[in-house]
Length: 275
Image (cartoon, rainbow, N blue to C red; front, side, top):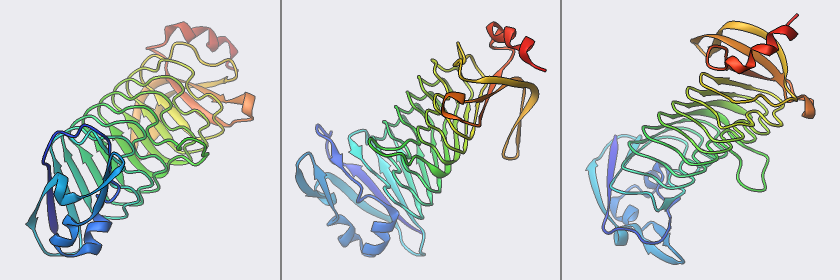
C-alpha cells in the first residue's frame, strides 16, 4: 500500500477547496512530485499542495492508497470527493463536504467534522469519532438526491436534517440530533442512539428511522402501527420496546419511525389506537 502524509504548513485562515485530496487523484499522479503539484484553492487563489502542506511518502507499493492528514483540517472543503477506493484518515477536525459523492473506500476522522458529511454518498464508509454538523448524508441545496448507499457512523452528535432526501444506505448517530432528521427521506436507515430536537421524519416517503432517546412529539401526520420488542438493522437486533409509526401520511409516505417506548412516556396515549 502507498501511504501519503499531509501536514498543514500553517494555520489556515480562509477555506481551502481541497477536492483534489483523494486516493483516486493521488493514485493517478503515481509519483510524489506530481502529488505535490496537485492544485487546490486557498480562498480565491490557486495553490499547490506542496505550498500549503508538507507532503511525505511514508510507504510505496501496491494499488491501494492511504492519505493521512495530521493537524487541523477544519478549513478543508471537499476532501475525498467522489473517491472510489483507498483510505483517508484525518487526525484532527475535518471541514465541510467530506466524502461528497463518495463511491467506495473508507474515511476516518479522529475529531469533529463540518456540515454536509457524505452528501450524495453512493458507497463506502465514513466514521467520525466526534460530532458532525448539519446535513449528514443529505442532498446539496437545490437537489433531491441524498445519500444512496454506503455507511456513515458518527460517534458523537449531529446537527439538523440528517439524511435529507436519503435514498439508501445507513446512517448511525451515537448522540443527539437536531431538527428534521430524515426529512424527505425515500429509503435507507437512520439510527439515532440519543434524542431528537423534533420534527423527525417530516415528509418522509420511505425508509426507517430508529430513535433510542426522546423525540418530544411525533408529527400528527404519522399513524401508530404497533409496538415491537426489537428493531432489526442489518444483522443487529436493537432491543426495545418501540412504538412503530407509519408516515409521513401528508406526503403519501410509507416510511417507518421506531421510537423508544420507555424513553417517551408522553406517547403512551397512542396505545389506545393500536388494534
